[in-house]
Amino acid sequence: MNASRPVPRVPRLGVNIDHVATIRNARGGRHPDPVAAAKLAAEAGADGITAHLREDRRHIGDEDIARLSTEIGLPLNLEMAATDEMLAIALKARPHAACIVPERREEVTTEGGLDAARHHNHLAPMVRQLSEAGIRVSLFIEADEMQLEAARALGAPVVELHTGAYCHAALDGTAAERERLLERLRRGAAFGQKLGLEVHAGHGLTYDTVPPIAAIPGIAELNIGHFLIGEAIFDGLAPAIRKMRAIIEQSALAAKAV
Picture 1 (cartoon, helix red, strand yellow):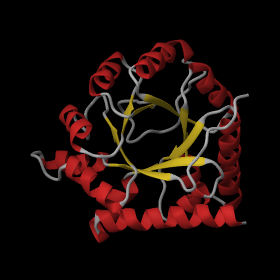
Picture 2 (tube, one colour):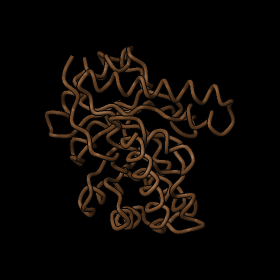
Picture 3 (tube, helix red, strand yellow):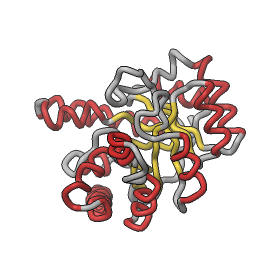
Picture 4 (cartoon, rainbow, N blue to C red):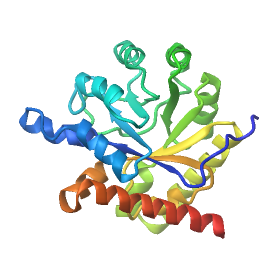
């Protein structure tokens, strides 16, 4: 196994601005502008911007990606399905990172992790082309050893662990279920690092559910979007990002002090 990659002292915060575009598209026009939201996120302390260009363009559009690629001062993480269309867009836009995610047209949001093991032959040339273009590739997967080994075999340097089931259990499940899913994420993060992968996490995280995830040793980055955009309605986007960053930092540092 490869040596673990060095990780930051506290997880980086990537802010997903998809749902600023969702609100814009509900009425049409140009407002609210997701690029303006990305710039505000940068000022509020975000370490990166995430945007998912879906096949049906339900929120982020092609012009948004083009502008985000040139107008913001933070690394852009492009979430994309494993299709030829999205590969061509990524190779043209040259974002800092491309996170390959599963995508179904009928889903409301991403429902689970990518099956990297099953789709190895389809993913391999995409991972190779993105990497050769200087784009950091990550795979959005479940915290499962088979999927983590598949990610390493594909040559993806980064994985993002799907935290959706844990977050759902934290709201509507039992304490035992929540702990079981949290322990699965802990084990997955540790195994991924042993494989030499940089480990990220995201999906469904809130002020209440993020502390145990931020406390997992070696988590390098958390990507959070829908909750922050929702909180922005009440408190503003910048205060919501600052509060989330503070919770992440406090949780990670407290865990290191134990």
